[in-house]
Length: 301
Image 1: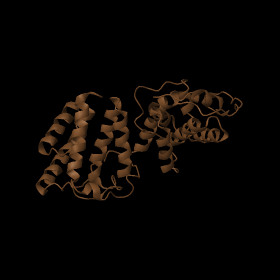
Image 2: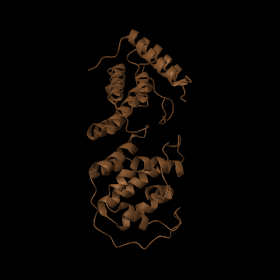
Image 3: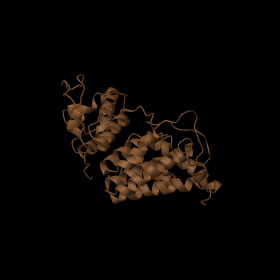
Image 4: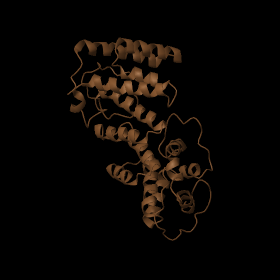
């Protein structure tokens, strides 16, 4: 079992974390990176500083991957034996957050490099560490499972969060039903429910509107910004599913934003074949078990 770092190492990590927060407030990239390097020199366990360096490295590069892995390792070492003690409650304790941020970034880096299995495993294990999923890991995992054609695992994931009211969850649930059952009344009902959650998504999925190169910084429930984020993450899952876009077009309600009237529902078909396919500073000493007050969000605290 990994031991908790010595007190002097934790004190150094506290000092490094202070420098990291200075980096977050720096006005230039050059200043941010210099302060991140300074933080790492003070304590190699400062995972957040390593995350900052990784975020500024070339996406998908060996350098980026190595930095993300170093960040995960640093976050894990900083937790020591508390890693197992806090399993199931990660993110609820402030000292677990650098590790979780680093691991999310590592998963993305692996996915960008085509290492799908490793990326999926990281996200699945993150949900074991934090079933409450304050970071929204499940949404990315669902989109990747769709893209990879791993329907059984997607089905199990959707069952774990049955009360999720996010539009992305509703739209993915509808697509999963179509992949599993085909054009059934049940699948169409789920599609209608998804449309009620966010009516802007079909226009982007059907190519009537282009997803902007820069994603909106925020999302509003049912808004067009939410639609843009969902389609940027899940478009491949839809396009990889034979007949899914045609099914969507054929079953859009008359109130669809495209202005088209709904076409008569076709007779149920057999299930289709899926193709392969600025931060608030927490006043918490690093390495000390501290429960976050209230319900934690998915921010970068």
